[in-house]
Image (cartoon, rainbow, N blue to C red; front, side, top):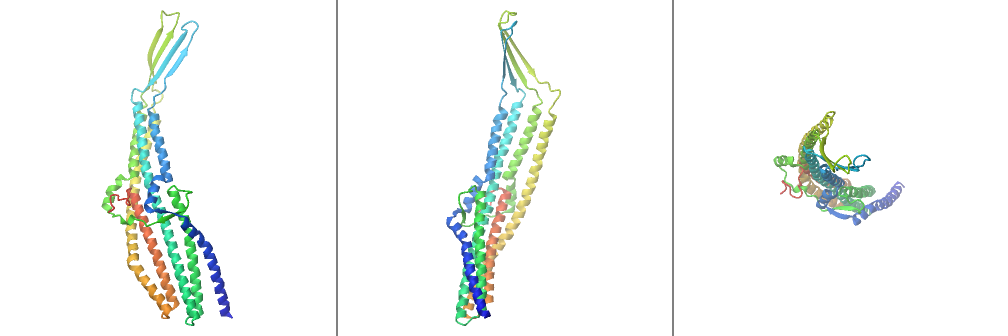
Length: 422
Protein backbone atom coordinates (compact mmCIF):
# COMPACT_ATOMS: atom_id res chain seq x y z
CA UNK A 1 0.00 0.00 0.00
CA UNK A 2 2.77 2.39 0.95
CA UNK A 3 4.63 1.55 -2.29
CA UNK A 4 1.47 2.28 -4.29
CA UNK A 5 1.03 5.61 -2.50
CA UNK A 6 4.65 6.55 -3.25
CA UNK A 7 4.16 5.59 -6.87
CA UNK A 8 1.05 7.77 -7.13
CA UNK A 9 2.82 10.68 -5.46
CA UNK A 10 5.79 10.24 -7.78
CA UNK A 11 3.58 10.28 -10.86
CA UNK A 12 1.68 13.34 -9.61
CA UNK A 13 4.93 15.13 -8.82
CA UNK A 14 6.32 14.36 -12.24
CA UNK A 15 3.18 15.60 -14.01
CA UNK A 16 3.06 18.77 -11.90
CA UNK A 17 6.73 19.58 -12.40
CA UNK A 18 6.51 18.98 -16.13
CA UNK A 19 3.57 21.41 -16.38
CA UNK A 20 5.23 24.07 -14.21
CA UNK A 21 8.60 23.81 -15.91
CA UNK A 22 7.00 24.04 -19.34
CA UNK A 23 5.09 27.18 -18.38
CA UNK A 24 8.08 28.87 -16.71
CA UNK A 25 10.60 27.93 -19.37
CA UNK A 26 8.42 29.26 -22.18
CA UNK A 27 9.37 32.93 -21.56
CA UNK A 28 13.05 32.03 -21.66
CA UNK A 29 12.65 30.20 -24.97
CA UNK A 30 10.55 33.04 -26.39
CA UNK A 31 13.24 35.54 -25.36
CA UNK A 32 15.98 33.46 -26.98
CA UNK A 33 13.98 33.17 -30.20
CA UNK A 34 13.18 36.90 -30.42
CA UNK A 35 16.43 38.33 -29.03
CA UNK A 36 18.64 40.41 -31.30
CA UNK A 37 22.24 39.22 -30.94
CA UNK A 38 24.74 41.78 -29.67
CA UNK A 39 28.45 41.07 -29.50
CA UNK A 40 30.73 42.34 -26.74
CA UNK A 41 32.35 44.83 -29.10
CA UNK A 42 28.98 46.10 -30.37
CA UNK A 43 27.70 46.65 -26.84
CA UNK A 44 30.81 48.59 -25.86
CA UNK A 45 30.65 50.75 -28.98
CA UNK A 46 26.97 51.48 -28.35
CA UNK A 47 27.71 52.32 -24.72
CA UNK A 48 30.36 54.82 -25.80
CA UNK A 49 28.04 56.46 -28.33
CA UNK A 50 24.53 56.25 -26.91
CA UNK A 51 24.69 55.75 -23.15
CA UNK A 52 22.35 58.14 -21.27
CA UNK A 53 25.22 59.90 -19.48
CA UNK A 54 27.00 60.43 -22.79
CA UNK A 55 23.96 62.17 -24.23
CA UNK A 56 23.73 64.40 -21.16
CA UNK A 57 27.44 65.23 -21.29
CA UNK A 58 27.15 66.08 -24.99
CA UNK A 59 24.28 68.44 -24.19
CA UNK A 60 26.34 70.17 -21.50
CA UNK A 61 29.19 70.47 -23.98
CA UNK A 62 26.92 72.28 -26.44
CA UNK A 63 25.81 74.68 -23.72
CA UNK A 64 29.41 75.40 -22.72
CA UNK A 65 30.43 76.09 -26.31
CA UNK A 66 27.50 78.45 -26.77
CA UNK A 67 28.57 80.24 -23.60
CA UNK A 68 31.81 81.29 -25.33
CA UNK A 69 29.77 83.42 -27.70
CA UNK A 70 27.78 84.81 -24.80
CA UNK A 71 30.95 85.82 -22.95
CA UNK A 72 32.36 87.51 -26.04
CA UNK A 73 29.26 89.49 -26.91
CA UNK A 74 29.59 93.26 -26.63
CA UNK A 75 26.94 95.29 -24.84
CA UNK A 76 24.41 97.05 -27.04
CA UNK A 77 24.76 100.84 -27.46
CA UNK A 78 22.20 103.13 -25.89
CA UNK A 79 20.45 105.53 -28.25
CA UNK A 80 18.33 108.42 -27.03
CA UNK A 81 16.28 111.18 -28.67
CA UNK A 82 14.94 114.36 -26.99
CA UNK A 83 13.12 117.52 -28.00
CA UNK A 84 12.64 120.84 -26.25
CA UNK A 85 10.38 123.89 -26.66
CA UNK A 86 12.98 126.59 -25.95
CA UNK A 87 16.23 124.97 -27.06
CA UNK A 88 17.02 122.22 -29.56
CA UNK A 89 14.12 120.86 -31.52
CA UNK A 90 15.91 117.49 -31.76
CA UNK A 91 18.62 116.05 -29.59
CA UNK A 92 20.16 112.65 -30.41
CA UNK A 93 22.58 110.80 -28.06
CA UNK A 94 24.60 107.62 -28.37
CA UNK A 95 26.42 105.76 -25.55
CA UNK A 96 28.64 102.72 -26.28
CA UNK A 97 30.22 100.59 -23.50
CA UNK A 98 33.87 99.89 -24.38
CA UNK A 99 35.66 97.11 -22.41
CA UNK A 100 39.10 98.52 -23.11
CA UNK A 101 40.94 96.89 -20.20
CA UNK A 102 40.67 93.21 -21.17
CA UNK A 103 37.35 92.38 -19.54
CA UNK A 104 35.99 90.75 -22.70
CA UNK A 105 39.16 88.77 -23.42
CA UNK A 106 39.38 87.29 -19.91
CA UNK A 107 35.67 86.38 -19.94
CA UNK A 108 36.06 84.62 -23.29
CA UNK A 109 39.15 82.76 -22.04
CA UNK A 110 37.25 81.54 -18.97
CA UNK A 111 34.30 80.41 -21.11
CA UNK A 112 36.63 78.54 -23.46
CA UNK A 113 38.17 76.82 -20.46
CA UNK A 114 34.71 75.67 -19.40
CA UNK A 115 34.06 74.44 -22.96
CA UNK A 116 37.32 72.48 -23.00
CA UNK A 117 36.45 70.87 -19.67
CA UNK A 118 32.97 70.02 -20.97
CA UNK A 119 34.45 68.37 -24.06
CA UNK A 120 36.74 66.25 -21.87
CA UNK A 121 33.73 65.41 -19.71
CA UNK A 122 32.16 63.84 -22.81
CA UNK A 123 35.26 61.65 -23.20
CA UNK A 124 35.03 60.64 -19.54
CA UNK A 125 31.32 59.86 -19.99
CA UNK A 126 32.15 57.69 -23.01
CA UNK A 127 34.62 55.71 -20.88
CA UNK A 128 31.93 55.31 -18.21
CA UNK A 129 29.42 54.24 -20.86
CA UNK A 130 31.85 51.66 -22.24
CA UNK A 131 32.41 50.28 -18.76
CA UNK A 132 28.69 50.12 -17.93
CA UNK A 133 27.94 48.39 -21.24
CA UNK A 134 30.75 45.88 -20.65
CA UNK A 135 29.40 44.98 -17.20
CA UNK A 136 25.80 44.75 -18.45
CA UNK A 137 26.82 42.55 -21.41
CA UNK A 138 28.82 40.28 -19.09
CA UNK A 139 25.80 39.98 -16.79
CA UNK A 140 23.66 38.92 -19.75
CA UNK A 141 26.30 36.52 -21.04
CA UNK A 142 26.68 34.93 -17.60
CA UNK A 143 22.90 34.61 -17.24
CA UNK A 144 22.66 32.93 -20.64
CA UNK A 145 25.50 30.54 -19.89
CA UNK A 146 24.01 29.64 -16.52
CA UNK A 147 20.63 29.01 -18.15
CA UNK A 148 22.27 26.84 -20.82
CA UNK A 149 24.19 24.76 -18.27
CA UNK A 150 21.15 24.25 -16.08
CA UNK A 151 19.10 23.25 -19.11
CA UNK A 152 21.76 20.66 -19.93
CA UNK A 153 21.70 19.50 -16.30
CA UNK A 154 17.93 19.07 -16.57
CA UNK A 155 18.48 16.92 -19.66
CA UNK A 156 21.06 14.84 -17.75
CA UNK A 157 18.63 14.40 -14.86
CA UNK A 158 15.96 13.32 -17.32
CA UNK A 159 18.32 10.74 -18.80
CA UNK A 160 19.28 9.36 -15.39
CA UNK A 161 15.62 9.16 -14.39
CA UNK A 162 14.94 7.16 -17.53
CA UNK A 163 17.82 4.80 -16.74
CA UNK A 164 16.55 4.33 -13.17
CA UNK A 165 13.05 3.58 -14.43
CA UNK A 166 14.38 1.06 -16.94
CA UNK A 167 16.47 -0.66 -14.26
CA UNK A 168 13.48 -0.76 -11.89
CA UNK A 169 11.29 -2.33 -14.55
CA UNK A 170 14.03 -4.86 -15.22
CA UNK A 171 14.19 -5.66 -11.51
CA UNK A 172 17.81 -4.52 -11.09
CA UNK A 173 17.16 -1.30 -9.13
CA UNK A 174 14.92 -0.46 -6.17
CA UNK A 175 11.89 1.82 -6.29
CA UNK A 176 13.71 4.38 -4.19
CA UNK A 177 16.05 5.07 -7.14
CA UNK A 178 13.03 5.99 -9.26
CA UNK A 179 11.72 8.36 -6.60
CA UNK A 180 15.13 9.93 -6.01
CA UNK A 181 15.80 10.52 -9.71
CA UNK A 182 12.30 11.94 -10.16
CA UNK A 183 12.94 14.44 -7.38
CA UNK A 184 16.34 15.32 -8.82
CA UNK A 185 14.76 15.79 -12.24
CA UNK A 186 12.12 18.11 -10.76
CA UNK A 187 14.78 20.17 -9.00
CA UNK A 188 16.86 20.43 -12.19
CA UNK A 189 13.84 21.60 -14.17
CA UNK A 190 12.99 24.23 -11.56
CA UNK A 191 16.59 25.50 -11.53
CA UNK A 192 16.62 25.69 -15.32
CA UNK A 193 13.31 27.58 -15.41
CA UNK A 194 14.54 30.07 -12.81
CA UNK A 195 17.79 30.66 -14.70
CA UNK A 196 15.92 31.14 -17.98
CA UNK A 197 13.66 33.75 -16.35
CA UNK A 198 16.69 35.85 -15.29
CA UNK A 199 17.89 36.29 -18.89
CA UNK A 200 15.21 38.84 -19.96
CA UNK A 201 16.01 40.97 -16.90
CA UNK A 202 19.70 41.08 -17.80
CA UNK A 203 18.72 41.91 -21.39
CA UNK A 204 16.64 44.87 -20.20
CA UNK A 205 19.57 46.22 -18.15
CA UNK A 206 21.85 45.99 -21.17
CA UNK A 207 19.31 47.84 -23.32
CA UNK A 208 19.34 50.77 -20.90
CA UNK A 209 23.13 51.06 -20.87
CA UNK A 210 23.43 51.11 -24.67
CA UNK A 211 20.46 53.37 -25.33
CA UNK A 212 18.18 50.79 -26.96
CA UNK A 213 15.20 50.81 -24.60
CA UNK A 214 12.05 49.62 -26.37
CA UNK A 215 13.93 47.99 -29.25
CA UNK A 216 13.13 44.43 -28.16
CA UNK A 217 15.08 41.77 -26.26
CA UNK A 218 18.83 41.47 -26.69
CA UNK A 219 21.07 38.44 -26.56
CA UNK A 220 24.79 38.22 -25.84
CA UNK A 221 26.49 36.70 -28.87
CA UNK A 222 29.98 35.23 -28.81
CA UNK A 223 32.17 35.70 -25.79
CA UNK A 224 34.03 38.48 -24.00
CA UNK A 225 37.54 39.33 -25.10
CA UNK A 226 39.25 41.45 -22.47
CA UNK A 227 41.20 38.38 -21.36
CA UNK A 228 43.42 38.82 -24.45
CA UNK A 229 44.89 42.03 -23.03
CA UNK A 230 48.44 41.93 -21.76
CA UNK A 231 48.50 43.85 -18.48
CA UNK A 232 51.74 45.45 -17.37
CA UNK A 233 51.41 47.30 -14.04
CA UNK A 234 54.29 49.67 -14.80
CA UNK A 235 52.86 50.64 -18.18
CA UNK A 236 49.37 51.03 -16.75
CA UNK A 237 50.71 53.41 -14.10
CA UNK A 238 52.45 55.47 -16.80
CA UNK A 239 49.27 55.77 -18.86
CA UNK A 240 47.03 56.60 -15.89
CA UNK A 241 47.72 60.40 -15.94
CA UNK A 242 46.15 60.52 -19.42
CA UNK A 243 42.83 59.22 -18.05
CA UNK A 244 39.92 61.27 -19.50
CA UNK A 245 38.63 62.05 -16.01
CA UNK A 246 42.02 63.38 -14.89
CA UNK A 247 42.43 65.46 -18.05
CA UNK A 248 38.92 66.83 -17.47
CA UNK A 249 39.82 67.70 -13.87
CA UNK A 250 42.97 69.50 -14.98
CA UNK A 251 40.92 71.43 -17.54
CA UNK A 252 38.47 72.40 -14.80
CA UNK A 253 41.35 73.73 -12.68
CA UNK A 254 42.57 75.83 -15.60
CA UNK A 255 39.04 77.10 -16.25
CA UNK A 256 38.60 77.98 -12.58
CA UNK A 257 41.86 79.93 -12.62
CA UNK A 258 40.66 81.76 -15.75
CA UNK A 259 37.45 82.67 -13.93
CA UNK A 260 39.51 84.15 -11.08
CA UNK A 261 41.38 86.32 -13.58
CA UNK A 262 38.12 87.32 -15.25
CA UNK A 263 36.61 88.40 -11.92
CA UNK A 264 39.75 90.35 -11.06
CA UNK A 265 39.68 92.07 -14.43
CA UNK A 266 36.10 93.18 -13.83
CA UNK A 267 37.41 95.49 -11.12
CA UNK A 268 38.59 97.71 -13.95
CA UNK A 269 35.90 100.13 -15.12
CA UNK A 270 34.00 99.87 -18.38
CA UNK A 271 34.51 103.03 -20.47
CA UNK A 272 31.36 104.47 -22.02
CA UNK A 273 31.88 106.51 -25.16
CA UNK A 274 29.18 109.18 -25.47
CA UNK A 275 28.10 111.32 -28.42
CA UNK A 276 25.26 113.86 -28.48
CA UNK A 277 23.95 116.01 -31.37
CA UNK A 278 21.59 118.97 -30.85
CA UNK A 279 19.88 120.23 -33.99
CA UNK A 280 17.96 123.49 -34.58
CA UNK A 281 18.78 125.09 -31.23
CA UNK A 282 17.79 128.81 -31.44
CA UNK A 283 20.42 129.67 -28.84
CA UNK A 284 23.19 128.37 -31.10
CA UNK A 285 24.39 129.42 -34.51
CA UNK A 286 24.42 125.84 -35.83
CA UNK A 287 24.17 122.14 -34.98
CA UNK A 288 25.98 121.32 -31.74
CA UNK A 289 28.01 118.06 -31.41
CA UNK A 290 29.08 116.94 -27.92
CA UNK A 291 31.45 114.03 -27.21
CA UNK A 292 32.76 112.55 -23.99
CA UNK A 293 33.62 109.53 -21.85
CA UNK A 294 32.11 108.17 -18.64
CA UNK A 295 33.10 105.30 -16.38
CA UNK A 296 32.05 103.50 -13.25
CA UNK A 297 33.92 104.63 -10.14
CA UNK A 298 35.10 101.49 -8.26
CA UNK A 299 34.55 102.93 -4.82
CA UNK A 300 31.78 100.97 -3.14
CA UNK A 301 32.59 97.53 -4.58
CA UNK A 302 35.88 95.97 -5.66
CA UNK A 303 34.21 92.56 -6.41
CA UNK A 304 35.86 91.02 -3.37
CA UNK A 305 33.05 88.50 -2.86
CA UNK A 306 32.99 87.38 -6.49
CA UNK A 307 36.78 86.97 -6.56
CA UNK A 308 36.73 84.99 -3.30
CA UNK A 309 34.04 82.70 -4.70
CA UNK A 310 36.04 82.10 -7.88
CA UNK A 311 39.15 81.27 -5.82
CA UNK A 312 37.14 78.87 -3.67
CA UNK A 313 35.88 77.13 -6.83
CA UNK A 314 39.46 76.86 -8.05
CA UNK A 315 40.53 75.30 -4.74
CA UNK A 316 37.60 72.88 -4.93
CA UNK A 317 38.60 71.86 -8.47
CA UNK A 318 42.18 71.23 -7.33
CA UNK A 319 41.01 69.15 -4.36
CA UNK A 320 38.62 67.17 -6.55
CA UNK A 321 41.39 66.44 -9.06
CA UNK A 322 43.75 65.23 -6.33
CA UNK A 323 41.11 62.97 -4.81
CA UNK A 324 40.14 61.60 -8.22
CA UNK A 325 43.76 60.76 -9.00
CA UNK A 326 44.19 58.90 -5.71
CA UNK A 327 40.89 57.07 -6.22
CA UNK A 328 41.86 55.92 -9.69
CA UNK A 329 45.25 54.72 -8.45
CA UNK A 330 43.54 52.69 -5.72
CA UNK A 331 40.91 51.36 -8.16
CA UNK A 332 43.64 50.31 -10.58
CA UNK A 333 45.62 48.44 -7.93
CA UNK A 334 42.48 46.75 -6.58
CA UNK A 335 41.11 45.76 -9.99
CA UNK A 336 44.50 44.50 -11.19
CA UNK A 337 44.89 42.26 -8.14
CA UNK A 338 41.39 40.83 -8.53
CA UNK A 339 41.92 40.32 -12.25
CA UNK A 340 45.07 38.30 -11.59
CA UNK A 341 43.32 36.10 -9.03
CA UNK A 342 40.15 35.62 -11.08
CA UNK A 343 42.15 34.81 -14.19
CA UNK A 344 44.16 32.14 -12.38
CA UNK A 345 40.96 30.60 -10.99
CA UNK A 346 39.24 30.57 -14.39
CA UNK A 347 42.24 28.91 -16.04
CA UNK A 348 42.52 26.29 -13.31
CA UNK A 349 38.85 25.36 -13.55
CA UNK A 350 39.01 25.13 -17.34
CA UNK A 351 42.22 23.12 -17.62
CA UNK A 352 42.45 21.06 -14.41
CA UNK A 353 39.06 20.66 -12.73
CA UNK A 354 36.45 20.32 -15.46
CA UNK A 355 38.16 17.69 -17.64
CA UNK A 356 38.58 15.41 -14.63
CA UNK A 357 34.99 15.87 -13.46
CA UNK A 358 33.68 15.28 -16.98
CA UNK A 359 35.49 11.95 -17.03
CA UNK A 360 34.25 11.04 -13.55
CA UNK A 361 30.66 11.81 -14.53
CA UNK A 362 30.91 9.70 -17.70
CA UNK A 363 32.48 6.74 -15.89
CA UNK A 364 29.98 6.93 -13.02
CA UNK A 365 26.99 7.02 -15.36
CA UNK A 366 28.29 3.98 -17.25
CA UNK A 367 28.90 2.22 -13.94
CA UNK A 368 25.37 2.92 -12.72
CA UNK A 369 23.89 1.70 -15.99
CA UNK A 370 25.88 -1.55 -15.62
CA UNK A 371 25.03 -1.91 -11.93
CA UNK A 372 28.57 -1.34 -10.65
CA UNK A 373 27.90 2.06 -9.07
CA UNK A 374 25.00 3.14 -6.86
CA UNK A 375 22.71 6.06 -7.65
CA UNK A 376 24.04 8.42 -4.98
CA UNK A 377 27.53 8.35 -6.45
CA UNK A 378 26.12 9.16 -9.89
CA UNK A 379 24.05 12.07 -8.56
CA UNK A 380 27.06 13.39 -6.64
CA UNK A 381 29.21 13.17 -9.77
CA UNK A 382 26.60 15.04 -11.82
CA UNK A 383 26.20 17.70 -9.15
CA UNK A 384 29.97 18.21 -8.85
CA UNK A 385 30.29 18.54 -12.62
CA UNK A 386 27.41 21.04 -12.83
CA UNK A 387 28.72 23.15 -9.94
CA UNK A 388 32.18 23.24 -11.47
CA UNK A 389 30.84 24.23 -14.90
CA UNK A 390 28.82 27.05 -13.32
CA UNK A 391 31.85 28.03 -11.26
CA UNK A 392 33.91 28.24 -14.44
CA UNK A 393 31.37 30.59 -16.03
CA UNK A 394 31.27 32.71 -12.87
CA UNK A 395 35.06 32.78 -12.69
CA UNK A 396 35.40 33.88 -16.31
CA UNK A 397 32.74 36.55 -15.83
CA UNK A 398 34.47 37.76 -12.66
CA UNK A 399 37.79 37.86 -14.52
CA UNK A 400 36.31 39.88 -17.36
CA UNK A 401 34.59 42.25 -14.92
CA UNK A 402 37.87 42.83 -13.10
CA UNK A 403 39.59 43.52 -16.42
CA UNK A 404 36.80 45.96 -17.30
CA UNK A 405 37.46 47.71 -13.99
CA UNK A 406 41.19 47.85 -14.79
CA UNK A 407 40.30 49.38 -18.15
CA UNK A 408 37.93 51.85 -16.51
CA UNK A 409 40.50 52.84 -13.90
CA UNK A 410 43.30 53.40 -16.42
CA UNK A 411 41.12 55.03 -19.08
CA UNK A 412 42.27 53.11 -22.17
CA UNK A 413 40.40 50.65 -24.38
CA UNK A 414 42.01 47.27 -23.72
CA UNK A 415 39.63 45.45 -26.07
CA UNK A 416 40.47 47.47 -29.19
CA UNK A 417 44.20 47.30 -28.58
CA UNK A 418 44.99 50.11 -26.18
CA UNK A 419 48.55 50.38 -24.98
CA UNK A 420 48.62 46.95 -23.41
CA UNK A 421 46.79 44.54 -25.66
CA UNK A 422 48.74 42.17 -27.93
